[in-house]
Length: 124
Image: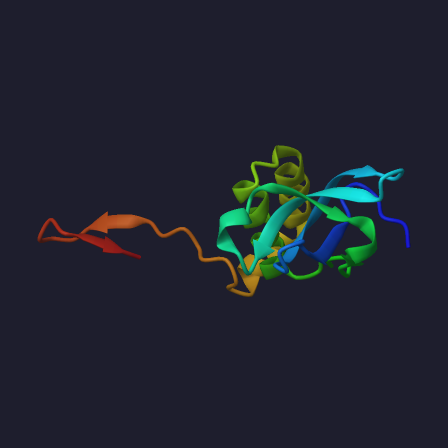
């Protein structure tokens, strides 16, 4: 199985830690992939780059963009990894779905604030 840069994969490190992440670079001659760790049972390596053997990689299924909640989770992930290009791509995908989500009450509406007769603020 051949892998490409940006593929989402699962692997085990040489220490036996389970990791999920995406491929940043590949060295086909050496059979080594450099991964950005997004999730791991070792919290200390999350957000860091590690190298693993290509033969130990398992491709993860591609994400679908038909669920607004899924897109919002991916936007959070893009923000946490400081991936501006991916963030912009995801927000573009959210725009058409965003109107439907608002109608389905998946995204909270912005409330306006009003002052009542006692001078206290109330949300409407």
